[in-house]
Image (cartoon, rainbow, N blue to C red):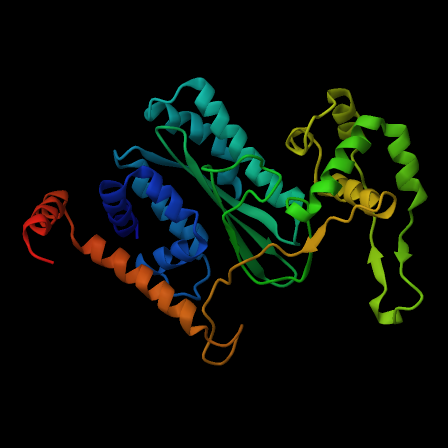
Length: 341
């Protein structure tokens, strides 16, 4: 897997450049087919973690201008160390390395706190080049169900970490999930910032006014359609106090504050909706499924179109990897220029 992933990556960099490899890794479909191409069955457990482990070993031992930081579990905590170590190897300056570390932290913070989809992040990797461009692949687990989902990011085009920043999420739709990064949540994010900047005492009164749990409904609705909202029991008031003293100008600055986690984000979102009428998005942002489906209909019937698309990706990747050495690839390119189409 290490050899195969390294070969595919090197050919892509040689043919299309380093940015193209980062772009492809940020595509959930391409990554899934890449995992299959280097040895995984489509339904295998560990597709993300093992594939990224193989890619990390391959790229960090090749001199093609791209490195990988982070990993699974405790290894993910070493991401800043990896970024400094391999960043120096690529000749990155301190300012660019700190930018990569901050980007790594923000992507993890968004997918663990700003989006609350019942999946807890346990794997985080960032792939970066000598210009400071990056792609993040991280994975979360829904322990109760045993479901995993993978989050993909690409640095190109990101204007804000807190509004529609990702390239895609692969997983099973959980239905209702708080997504403060959605475009629909823009007004709720603004209210959240205003609440923090207005002072802790005011915010405490707002939260106390809707605690314990309240139920909102219109009397003309059937009882089984009553809408319920749960206020978190534990809110980090020290972090909110620090945020108040900092006076954040935007949502990115708010979630950067140490201690602003899922409970605090959720509390601000619920106050925004219940008291100020600005409802955040409760639609699960997942866009892709891990699998094309099963012949037995589990987890869903086979999606032939998705299967064909993944197969084309794999065939392209495999044919490129079979080329082997760069000289042969250059010879084929030269030959292509003189052979009629």
